[in-house]
Image (cartoon, rainbow over all chains, first blue to last red; front, side):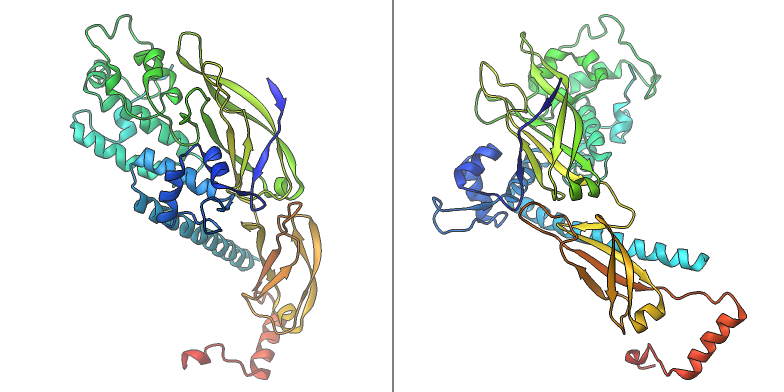
Length: 111
Length: 322
């Protein structure tokens, strides 16, 4: 079966209310509150009714759920893992670029 | 069907204690969890580890599996003997929280489809039970695309194994092919959410949603950083010293870039709007210069370097005090 589908892109253009966020991630508001208290996600606005969440927080929530369920990581551990994963991503990028530079040097050496 | 050596999968001896089984599993699960390990093979490995643990953590299942002995090697063609599980009783309680619908045919032939359905929960990037009763599970999958697919926008065909519950309550997987539009300017980590394309709902409940998380295949020259594209551009010493206008590759084709005089390796120049641009947001290409020194190939080349050495007073190590 092949179908053409309707989709939404979860990107920097989107913002969600608490209700929308809970609906997309299939979590209870308390779980979102716990993640906020741990500094894993941070909404704009003061009151929960006014909260706006950047769409990219959806991914952080999903990863949090998976790490907790699959690896039994607790909330502070999840926050630490997410920070370290971000850092690893940065480092991987730098490493990749340095490797490309060394590859260039080798090309010049051979010519 | 291939025989699966669950002990090898977990890297343990056949006489490992239950504690050793658990420790080996936890260590490998951390290592190969697809949220942590970005290798393309991690997800498959994580599932294999989960399946091996599912069997070996349960003393009854392990005893039954051990009946096949050491004579079987991984990958050997395997068919379970009839009534091989006589005398063993598999209770639902012994199941871990791993996603049994993702287990292999080998597992299923031994421990059965019905037992699969008893397992309670799902593994990463496959599916998870909805917390709302009746609604189908959300499915998660990764989609690996080329940078060019994002730059221009494209269409991808994708086949997923979609779990469904059949009439008798068994969980089965069915291949499901989707045509997915990749919108212009999508970036790594962003998700395409396809409402209603997850697992089927139960008892008339809504279908779950499908989340496709975008990742980029490695590119020969370009490194993406969110919306920006990074490129290391080799230039000659005279282009760096005197300035030049030189051609630079971008995802949208070659453009001319003005190198200012007195440029050094590491200097960063921006090509505005040449990154991954969506309809509302734009990214840039950042070009980092890398000066390449030509090897002198002839006597004339060497002479030229010697003339520079005599004519130019240059100590690149002055800041080191030498």
